[in-house]
Amino acid sequence: MRLVYPYCAVLICLLVTWSCTKETLVVVGDNPPYSTFNISDIKIENYVNRLFIDIIGREPLDDELIREVDRLKASGLKRETRDSIIYQLMTDTTFRENEFSYKAAFVQNLYNLAKVRCIEGVPDGDIQLNITVLRNGAYKDSLEGNWDSYYNALNQIRRNQATLDSRQAFYNRQIYYHQMFAFMIDNSTYDIINMNTFNFVRATFDELLWRLPTVQEFDKCFDMIETNQPEEIFGMLGSNKNDYIRILTESNEMYEGMIIWCYQVFMSRPPTSGEVVTLLPVYLNTKDINWVIAQILVTDEYANFR
Image 1 (tube, rainbow, N blue to C red):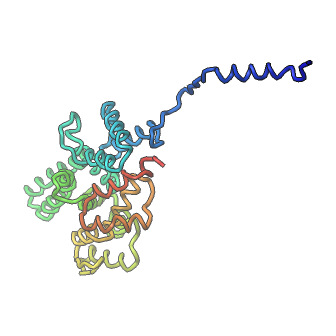
Image 2 (image 1 turned 180 degrees about the vertical axis):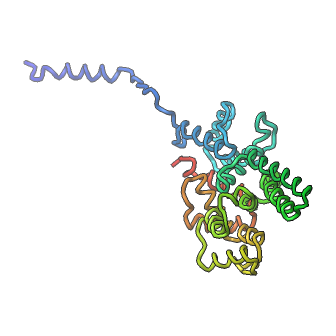
Image 3 (image 1 turned 180 degrees about the horizontal axis):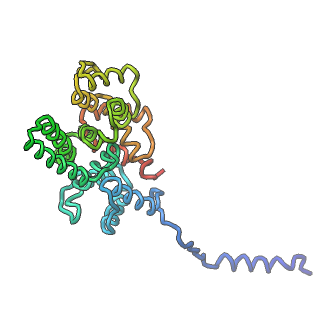
């Protein structure tokens, strides 16, 4: 009998041969590995790197980076682990060369950020130099009997020194972070940047509350500072510049302004109304800026884990 399909046998042999061939593994170079939770090691490393820069103002050392990345991966990027890393950088007082401790570096970073916001980041050395000049002038005034000028210089020295001392006071938990801003707007440098009462009122509203005053608010604040006239703002009564600073920095709007500040610094965007509503009640009660910052740094949006 003649074969009708002479190629069938050849085709069958080829199929059998191919099915017995071993699978070949193709490796693609420069492809970042992904964990079981579908986040690349590069993203985790970037998150740790960003935490160190934003919290203590520097990149992690190699051993710090490896340690924290391993912690995150081992826990599956759990919120608790992220919180642990964040709060360690904020509060750990273990001695570390060049920065004393994580806590000291964190406080220094917040202090620097406050100076940038209010007094253009002027170095402490410049403020100290101003104090020295004022002291020399006060000494000369005392010799010449210029007592008005003498006591004015002493007041300027006190204000400038209080600005410098606010960093240590915050470290020692003697003041809250929002209260540091009271010192940032009450010194010779701020006076020079925002000369006269008109500019002072507008600048303090803009920098602390992230808005300009209404006409009614401005008139009351101006009269309180310029003529020592008793006025009520934010539900509190004051009759001078010191009262104004106290009322402004202790108002509920100041706390809301601090939340806005945190989002602008760490997320480069303003918070949504929902984010403010979520954070504000707890912040009003605790006055804990560390908690507010941690609520931002722990998110997938900040970590770029989305």
